[in-house]
Length: 450
Image 1: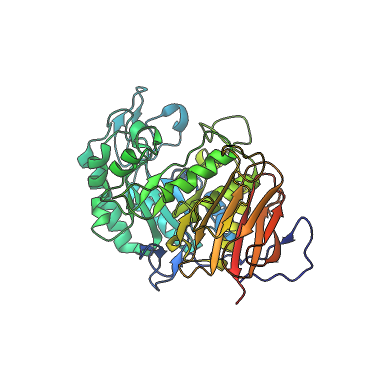
Image 2: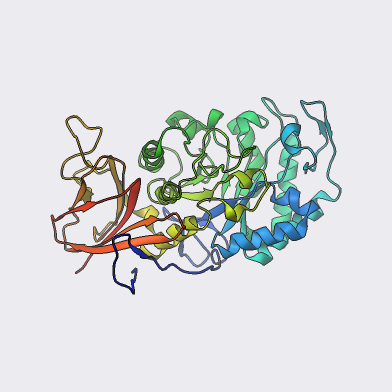
């Protein structure tokens, strides 16, 4: 239950959230329609993207460890990092890290990093000591075709598995075969499955790669997720905030039959504040939008989430100073306090008769509708006593009706520009209508009072 200790204001109270805590007890697992730990407790995994972490740690360990501590202090569980860099010399010259030797497409000879596996083991131990876990990935294994023979990459995975055997499997959150495989080696689903097999056989959570061009078409999602632990994707970045939020909801709501129930978003949209390389394709610095997108990843996507940023790709500045860095774990904490098992709940869009919160006047975009929200996507508990909804987009006045079937307490949450969570709490009778004002949207947490 969420507790408020000051009088409600128009802009909303600062929502109290928990401080930094251990990511989970023991090892992360795929449980019964939730991620769970060794104690059987549901987990909402949240990583921060720190692609260069290992490469930079080999060269500047103290600076990397300080960055890791700030990530931990902000209440992230894990980092996503790449254990192989070197193919794209325009990006990674002077930052190469690899157990392999090859000549890349730029004609540059990449040599194996001295004592590579010893350094990888020490790096992972330091991450563990700081209190973080890892989404272990790699890139730069080629371009449109492999630069490194598949057998060598499989052998690498075997060596990596031996490291986790030694330091403890609790350190590994998830093992990804290859970052954006279509442009980093192109091994395809069968090759990617072979790459993760040494860790899959040790019961690790494993993923393939996002499909070609990171398509989210059902056939592509299915091809790249069958026989893996999770649906792995890099969330849609084009369109506006409404488009992106709706697509996030669809990843879980319209997950193709035969695909894993749970997902993992490894590279969503993020901020790209300064001129220079970083988050490509598209970016947003809007904190309200970023926080809602991460909330939707957990709620509608039934997925682990990753805070993506310009400096999380190319570490040219402090990741913790990027927009949304502080607020993202705060929205996760609010969800964790209210509904830690949210991924088990039933999903409905606001037009469904089963929905607990609905617009009384329809939704913008529907025929003849001139005002109201654009969407009201939601998860409803199996006993229909609680609902988590995201109300977003549209044109004022924007209203919703309480169809939960009971007198309810509702908390409307958003992030302000200072990265605080703001919340307004109110009560609604069964069938009562409430008008909300917002710029992008609100996270609504509703529960029956009796």
